[in-house]
Image 1 (cartoon, helix red, strand yellow):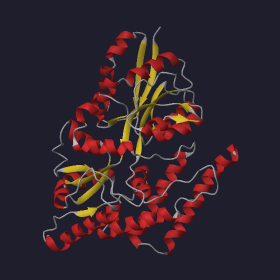
Image 2 (cartoon, rainbow, N blue to C red):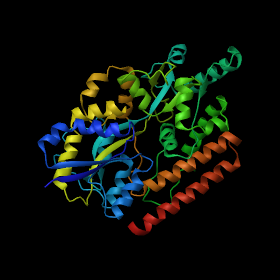
Image 3 (cartoon, helix red, strand yellow):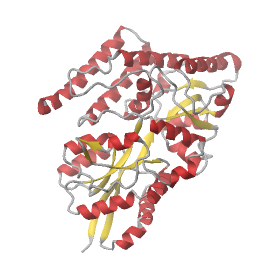
Image 4 (cartoon, rainbow, N blue to C red):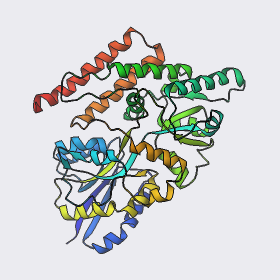
Length: 415
């Protein structure tokens, strides 16, 4: 009798080609396990968590699924995940944070699959002009000075308007805004409070506020407008990679990895760029660490087959091929690193992963993350439109109050 496994993958890149690719990569495994059939479904990170929870409530969850590292506490607390069997994680995580992110309440619930980290990029002509060492973080003072020089050149040295602005900060109310702002906040000395203690102060934290002042200064130097603040990630990437409108850019790994694995896309990458280390604030240069894991539903009727499939998906050869296909980074040791670690961009990203920081491991992090992302966006919009004023702190206090209301639901149940 065939064991049909429902497998949900959180990557819609290339559509049905992705399913064909994975099916081909798994051919040796499927040949050795003729009773196993796979029913694939592709999701995006925007809708996957909601779909997981909905399916579980309806009694139709997938057997094997990919999930974001920050979702693990929520899924484990809801008893949606099976604990990883002893010996299943045969491949070593490539960075310390991935081992930590796979655990909740002293048990391992996820098998690291892909890795994500801060990708801070610069135009190569800017790197050369200011003799920037990509592996050596600029201090915040040095970075601010370079931004001022770029802005002055735009105003006085280049009359045809082709000189870039220093930097663009996205202010859209999306999770990615929080992901890309967190390295600035951590480097500025901010740390998330212990979320089981109340009340918590996040947006009103003096360190967070002082970092936003620094970011506000960079936005002011760059002449940021509300139109630029509305840019989607796609528009921001086009502005940087195709048109060279900014000298520095915080982006996803996709373009950086594609440049290394397949070469620049001539339809997008018109401006030579390179990954550089995050600027170093009062607390250092602290990148974001995230990624995805593979897990098995606690409701599956095919535990053994599901975990055998997870083991096959986490095999180093498959992970290396998969991450090269979707232009991501492997979360485990594999020949991807042997093949590409000599590339300057990969060297910076690898170094970022080794000192990356993650969000708090909290069961309500999904709700908190949404409110923090919207709140941070709101504060940044306010800075773009009005600069810092008496309303800034009042808005931050209101957002903190709403965050405490979310946490109060957890405190009432758990404490």
